[in-house]
Image (tube, rainbow, N blue to C red; front, side, top):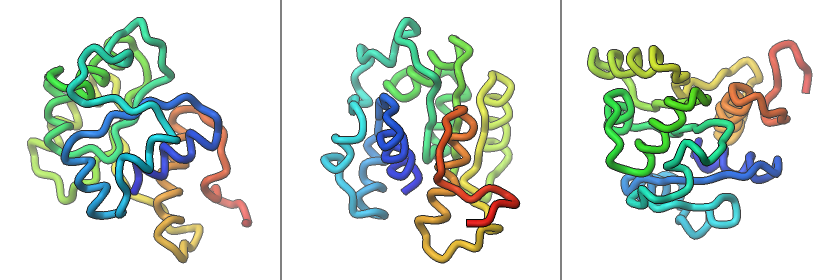
Length: 172
């Protein structure tokens, strides 16, 4: 839900977006949200996770950054250890080496020591670790309000202006 919300928001804001979905990510999107990859096609250029020749695998392809949302602990471990055997992990490695913004949104809980060490390693390499922890001060009434809160916080980290969330002290 978080990834879907973010991709739609970026599209609505007119921001060119490239999407890489893992095989498991595709299954979770279908299972949890009832959304197929076909639904995402209008919102972003979709790249196969197996295509290491995709544009986003090169440092010469300019991007504002990359968001891995949601980020499984398997993917987090790959990223933290510089494994570049998929397009997602290669693109993330490129973003780090080019000193661009990498935002990783884990949604696992609780974390064990290896998870925390991998997050620390990524943070030390320059990534922003942003667990999927939506706020409640805006008194959400629907799940989408919680999801959009997280998407808005991610957009904030990328420096993208939006209206997805009610800010602290604002009245709707």
